[in-house]
Image 1 (cartoon, rainbow, N blue to C red):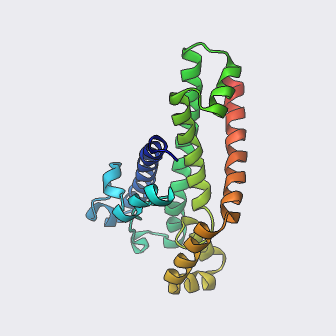
Image 2 (image 1 turned 45 degrees about the vertical axis):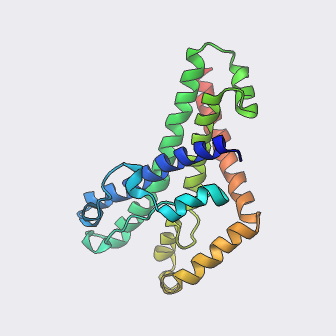
Length: 217
C-alpha cells in the first residue's frame, strides 16, 4: 500500500471504529450503565476511541482495532440479554454505515450524469478517487461487521458463546490472553482466515450493491 492508501485506510477506520465504539457506549448508557460516561467514551469523537499502539499498526500491518468500551452488565435489568444486544450493536452500526454510503455513491454517480456501466469500471479500476474512497468505506464497514461477529475472544461475537455454552465462555474469559495471542498469530501468519472474511464480505457487498443498484437504475 502506498502512503495515500494508508491515509485513506486510517481515516475510514478512525471514523468507522469511532462510531462503533460510540454505539457500544451509547446503548449501554441508555440501559442505565454509567461506565461509558464516567470514562469519557460517550462521544462519536474518534480520538476518544483510539488506542495509540493499535493506531500505529495501520502503518505496520494495515490493521487496527479501537480501544474497547468498558461496560458493566450488572446495571442492566436483564444482563445476559442486554449484554448481547450491546455487543451486536457494533456490527449493526457498521452495516447501517455501509448502506448509507452505498446510497451516497449511487446518488453522487447520478448527479454527475455518467453512464451506469461506467460506475462498475470506476469501482473495479479506481478511476474516480471519490468513488474509490467511498467504495472502500462501504467495503471496510462490512468487513468490520463480519470480522467482529466471529465467536472468538476478544471479538464481540464471543458473547454468543456466553448464551450458547456458558462453560466455554468461562474458559475463554479465564484464558483470554492466550487466546488473543494465538488469534493474532493466526491472523498474521496465514491467509485462511482472511480468505474466509474476504469471500463473505464480497458476497454481502455484491448483494447490497445489487439491491440498491436496481433502485437507482
